[in-house]
Image (cartoon, rainbow, N blue to C red; front, side):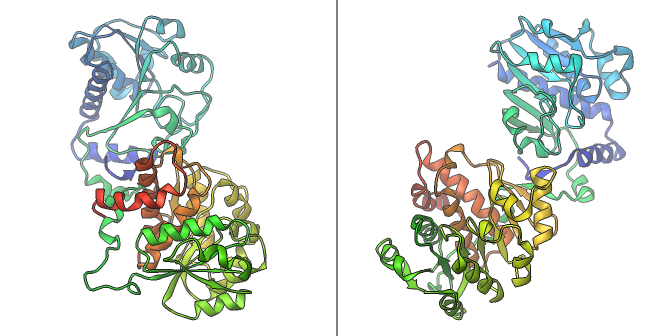
Length: 488
């Protein structure tokens, strides 16, 4: 699957550009319907089961009519139902309906009875208002009775740009879309309705992307692999960078998890600074960890005076107190790169200006979950994409908004959506490991936007390798196997 993600308007532009280049809309629709028919056959294991094809009044319905024709020609029992008046069809959708030689009945929930397979071609990604009346009842009726559902473009009722469910949407087994994925294919709640995603080539030339210039990407190694740091044959530990972490006194596990992750991913050295009362806890945790007691922010600033300590992590288990606040301001003022996580968002709640005045910029990665995000940036409107973009522009920093659909946003408007993370990662300490992975890449000189993207992807890949029952301690230990498996 290609990495570019197109908004609904960008996909319309791609269609128009293809047609302007001599590819007819009918040709695009014909190919789209053929792919849908192929995936219906695959969904049923190749056995000709009765299929109900539900068509809407637009081009999504046109794809359904073409799919029905190909399924019937292959010997499948097909019933076609239209939501709306056949006389109201226009353009390519009217052409597609005209190629279907069988009967077309009105779409209603009772006609789903006895159909173990349903092609949902009612509404595409451009839907912008909640479903009502007959359309809502039909979509609600699709779920249940053990039937399998294939949705065309997106499950009907899904908003293509933000992943919202507008009233209701079927839970599809397969969603077939064309040329490039849309935001809804990766953003919840819509992602939970899409099932297996198939992005099909229907003849739109790749060159249209030059005109569209997509700003949203699906996060994968192909985006950042050529900039991923690797040990040099003549290297040494200081060339691999020296990470500095501030640990707390109560929740000491957070900083230790981050430190272990940073070491596993190649940081040459890791120094953990802590208050003297916690020195013994950290000293006994890992032989490879350098532990420095600091009584206050002045002591932490003294550690920053060594330029070899080139990347900083602040927040995990740091506690909500003056040491974390003052150490953060010192690190920002020192012009370092680094990661701000966890307790940072409580210490600086409602005070983004204070961070920015101290030197927050695109050298820093902020990694909030939803609740932490609201503490610093407020309750912003819009999708996760919108909010992460806004926060990156306001702060000047890289924003990694954590969740099952983690969004990584750059101040210049670029966005990447991570999609490989299993639900097993929702466990205590998992986010601390993620922060440590990003820190390791920063110490080795990786650009912060790429470091956040690579860290999120590696975090997901490690979670997949560990599988069910994982705890946060398992994740750093899975990193070497992931690096070797993917040749990173």
